Image (cartoon, helix red, strand yellow):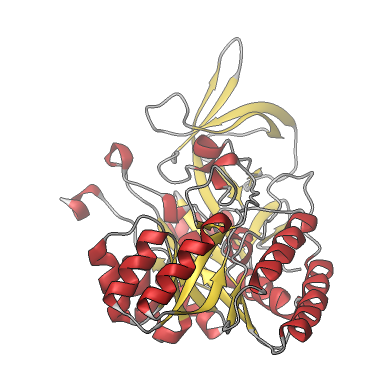
Length: 406
């Protein structure tokens, strides 16, 4: 498995580039992505699931940078989107309408009409959406998103299935689905589910797979089965990668059995986002202040939750390394941002190599839901993004200043 970073002579390197050199050249804070990691994760997923008719759609809300979308397209991924803006990005990256999936909830009439005009696959999320689709485009094929009562994720806010989830059409509402389908002459050719994000337990995955296959037997005209995403990655040192080969074999074996029972082979879709890009990304920040109180040592940085909101929003853990001196004397520190909010902390009471002002810190596994969730809160700059491909590094998005939105 390819790693985004390595340690050479006690310095953290991303690809072949020292983190300190990247900051000297491009500035700080700085998002850096290693292309080799994304390519490796996509290939591992495609080769592990032993099923011939497999489509992998990158869930681009994880990282919608145009150059990253292009990179994954060249590597063979299709795309899954959740907004008109993401469809525009997909189109600009070169995707055909047939390669784009749209999944979202509570969309307006005008948005649904626009989606129909784009001719992309829309995973209809409610009876209201289904009715509006039938009125606008009768006698057509459709995809529906189901809530089958199964939900999982790394945080309660990332669980997208089960009785408390806003997503999908509940299985108990299938009779109403049938009525609407018959009323408007629709044909359900795809059923879709997505149970949550950041899942590392393959048993939960297989429960969801089994449930969708069980439900699929009620639909005679299917062409596609869409299992959504949710493949997790380890964030903590104590966490392990999901055994994707083991999971892939179980999925493949089960799919072959199901297809024999169903009577024909269907195209199977998965929609990984985090799994493809999270581990490729590193957020580089600079130590600007070290505040030693009678109670704590605060290491201040030139970034904040406006650049990486996951620790504040989800209590998420990210490994943080002193890229300037990976090994050395250790101390317990709280790593803080420069936003005027008490919750602006990247880590609390974390053991790491002692820091000095102007040291470069590397916040790991930030390729997913990092920049894509960044904001200009407090009217601070949003950093550049840099992509490393082989020995070359290049800017793939310039920094954004307050002047850019005035």
